[in-house]
Each structure stands twice: as structure tokens, then as C-alpha cells.
Amino acid sequence: MEKKQTAFAGTWYPGTSKACEAAILQYLKDGQGRLQGDFMGGIVPHAGWHFSGSIAARVIASLVPNEGTVVDQSDTIDTILLFGAHMHRQSEPFIMTHGMIETPFGDIEVDKALTDNIAAGVGIRKRAPGKFPDENTLELQYPFIRYFFPRAKIVVAGVAPNGLAAIIGGMAAQEAKKLSRQIRIIGSTDMTHYGPDFGFTPAGCGQKAVDWVSTENDRNAIRAMTDMDVERVLSQGQDHKNMCCPGAVAATLAACKKNGAVKAIELDYATSFERSRSDSFVGYSGIVYGRA
View 1 (cartoon, one colour):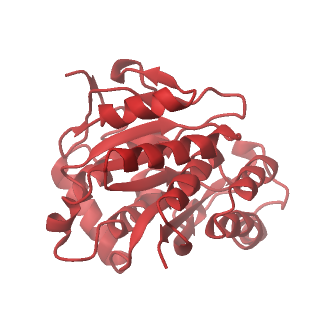
View 2 (view 1 turned 90 degrees about the vertical axis):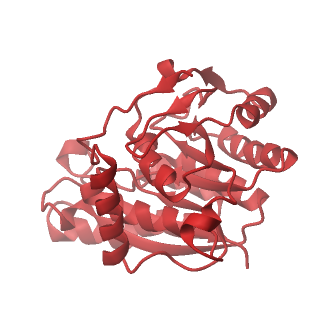
């Protein structure tokens, strides 16, 4: 079966299952573990694991059903919907059509039946594993998904920040219901990319810049995400540069709402400045969505 090979293993995240598991267990320990609740989706960052892996690990762990052990209950989830990709408003959305995705923990199978139904119902470019982009927004989540949901299949798509994003997300959730899939939904985005390296310095440099990003620019984006407001998410990301993948977030919100989500909880927030003090830094947020 055709396979999407890893591109970032051993650099952006550990290259072996043993090292990945050690990192994940440490992330959960340092971050006080997974959040208890009925959560069907979440927003995760996608920097190298050293910078934002702890946030992504906690979010994805929190999507495992609560009853019983994590290993037992993860088997009740059939498919993970993963949205990401760095895209412009005019970019063409894409989806992996079939095959397997390589991770240090083993391969993840693409849910071909669900992918076929989504692609038949909405305009989206179909890509085989060998032609699928090397996207850190997506690949950095694969090991977490394989670890916490070892038997789940996956639907993985790149979503542009335009009106089609919510249509793709809603369609994915709707087609999953038609196929009686139990799903979890993950959207991948980092927050403000600030500093001279990114050509974005509206608040100067140093601590005042970090404060502006964390308390104002990123905070406005997080409010839009926790309010589950698709239009505000798209406008915030495009007008204020506080999300690099607002299309992925919009698709995730639409899919979560279609699946019954009515509340959001901000799980974590951090910046790369805390790990490496520099005039150029990035914000990271972790959010989960669930029922009342």
C-alpha cells in the first residue's frame, strides 16, 4: 500500500518510538495530564516538539474518551479528521486520497471511504501519499494521533482561509455520520509570528512585544476560537496575522459544531520566547471543544 513518508522525524520531533513516547509522557506529566471531559475536537500548535509539543500532546490526549483506560477507550474512535497547511485565501484545498502515513509508532491508514465521500461532495484536490506535501502543520500531529488512537484511521486535509473552509469541515463531519464513524477533529495552527524574521513588528521588540502578542493579538484570536466564531477566526488570522492556518481552524470549528460541540476550553498558551529569548518568536495555543 502506498505510504506517505516522514519528512521531519528526527529533527522537529524524535525519530524513534521510544524517544517519542518518553517525550509524550514527560509532556503529560509537566502539563498535569489530560483534561477530563467530553471533548470531540481541538486546536493544536505545530512548531517543533521542543517548543510546542507539550501543548499538542495534552490537547490530543484530552480527546480520548474518559471511561476506562486510555488504551481501551481509544479503540472506540474510528477516524481522526486532521486539518492544517499553510495556505493563502486563493489556495486550492487538498486531501490525501488513500494509503498509509508513516510515524515512529507505526503507520496510520487513510480512511478511504470517508475521504472519497468528502471529495465527492466538495471541491478539493485529491492527492496520493507520494504527492502529498511535507507539511509540518500535519506531520507533527501524526505521532500523537498514532500514540493516543493506535487503531484509528485518518482523514487529512489542507484547508485555505476562505469560505470553503467551513464547508469542508461541515461536510467531513456530515459524511462521517453517514458512515457511522466515531470521530475526533484536530485543527493545526500556530499563533502570531512576530519579529524581524517574519517582517511583523508593530509593537517594537523585547518584553513589550511579547506582552502585546500574548495579551492582545493572540488573545483576540483565542477569543474568536473559544467563541467558535468561524467568520471572526478567518478575519483575525488574515487581518491581524495571529493565526498561520485560520482555514484549518475554521474547518475544525465547523466540524465540531456539526458534531454537537457547544463549548470551548483554553487548555494552554505559550510562546517560543519562553524557550529561546529572541526578537522573533511565535505564539502557541491549545483549545478543546466539547458538549455541554
